[in-house]
Amino acid sequence: MLSPEIFNFPAPESLFQVEKFEGKVPLNNQNINNFHYNHLVTIIIPDSAKLEQLNEKVTQDCSYYKILGLKLEDLVSLKFICGFIRSGKLSLLSIDRRIDCDTCFGLDPYGQLLVTVDKETYQSLGLEGSISHFTRKLKNHFTITVDLADEKLIKNTSRLSKLKTCLGRLEKCSVIVTWKPPNEDICPSSIAKYFSDLGYVVKQCTPNFRRHTVYSKVPDFDLGSIDVTNAKEFAEWLGFVSIDGDFQEDPSGYLSSYVVPSATGVAKKIDCLQWRGFFTATDIKEMIEQIIKTTNLANLPWISIYIQGFSDSPVSWTNEEQHYYTNGDNGYIIIFNKENGLFCIQKCSRKRYKDVNKYK
Amino acid sequence: MVRHKNRYILLEVKEIGRSDRSHLKLKEPSLYTAILKMVEKLHGDFGVAAIRAGFVAKYINQHTRTGIIRCRRGPHKLISSCIPFIKMVEDKIVSLNMLYVGATLRHCFGFLRNYQLKKFNEYCVSLNSEEEKAALREVMMSFEKLADRL
Amino acid sequence: MANSFYIDLSLKFPDPYGSEVSPVYFKKNITEALCQLFGEVSSAVDIDLLKFDKEGRRGILRVPKSHYVKLRSSLTLASRYEGTVCCYIIHKVSPFLLGLQGDSRNYNH
Image (cartoon, rainbow over all chains, first blue to last red; front, side, top):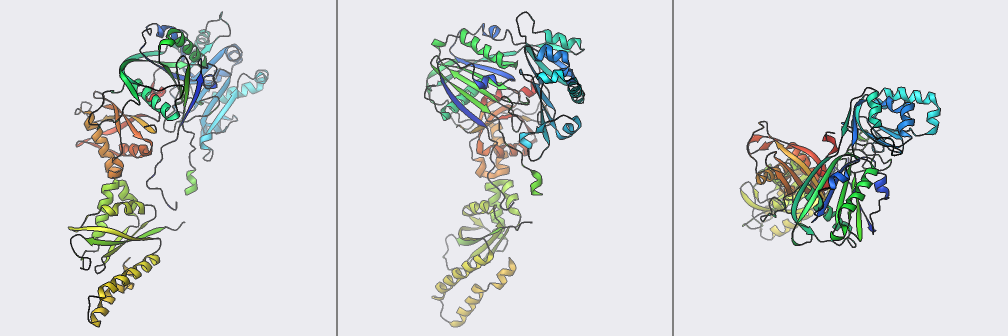
């Protein structure tokens, strides 16, 4: 390096986008639909009384199953593909795996199996894939996409059995799975029965609920004419509420110089409700609908819903690959009232690793 | 292998409370330690580590009170940001003035020659005999020794 | 301040019941760590302690984006708290405060 940089160390980039909408919340927004692996939902509501029944209503359909030590080859049996992947909506995600160093995989509702593997595993696997976006120059991470819903795959038995042996080489891994049946007659727990018949330990999980209340002044932003900087400030304040920060202003200013942005009036009661678990895009849409139904929107200045994805899911939105550079936070916030609203998206850094061999 | 780029900084040391003409005696390494201490204060351990490679600071002429620093390009920003803050060298209250920042020693010497010549002429006004002038010229304008020391 | 990074960290001592840490001392120690590695110029930056839990000695810091890398590296190298050996454990870092309320990595399904 001719002139080494000695002072400027830039932080990893991340993306914050703001979209505005008028009227109802656009539930068919691509950002909601294409975000399949959701981990955390937080609702922040000022001054609302009707929150008692919200938890039951919101999470009535959100239970999911945890399967311990799943062998991947069981996902490509003909019975499973026809019975669950091609009928109904199946979402599956590996857990307790770190995306930067382990094999991670996920199965989205459209039947796409996505596996991210390191170089050694990739070479021993024998499946066709492509180099990861982040290590394009280093070539030490690979992604494999298999379309399990493909008509041709089911008919081609030799390809199916080859796929089975290849995936069988991967080590066992715990997964979480949820399945939406194609019609109401079938119980969603069929998937649990299927895996338990295969000899796996299956555990039913329900979302973990937490609630707290804070008293704070409220930022006074008009959602119709808010700009990106103000939206960021508002999101920061929402974050401050969600972590249950200390709203007492520090008179000396030594510990914290945080002040509520453009705050007016007196401190109000603000409720923060949080669910953690495994939610699909459909679950999220139902939750948002329930929230709008349960709370009386006309009386509220705004409602905010924050949704965060899994840190170690192989993809973020649609097929956009993700990795864990400083964090794996992909998510969005919807802030709305009865007239208009904001849709803010927070994306992880898409930074590529540098080719270290270049400087040797 | 790529060539290291250096930066050469010419300094003037002013002692507070004394006239510009008087001699200022300083030991050679004292400028070095004073700068290193200030970099450690302002830029911490990281700053010291960054400047250490190829860093030379020497006080060269007590008549014109000049010093010269050699450092790597890049970390020279850390050094040049520290120089105005240095107040003490060897228990003497001083202020440092940056005269010139050059990329080669040649440029620096060119500047130094002109600068010394100007000072020499200024000093000559107060001197009477030719011998004294010749002696002064000898100490002020000899660059061979200086080049050896860097 | 729109361009910030948020760090969720805790202070650990070899003795689990070690001395009590007040928020002011916690912040002071962090500033000192930054001063040690990057000097007075860098430690003059605004670091805000948004939340501090005395029991677990765990806090959330806000730091401008431009100084995040510096702060993080000096926290890694920090080894002293008022004369005793200590270390900082960083649980999560995010450019988005809402992201710090939970990490799917250590969630037990």
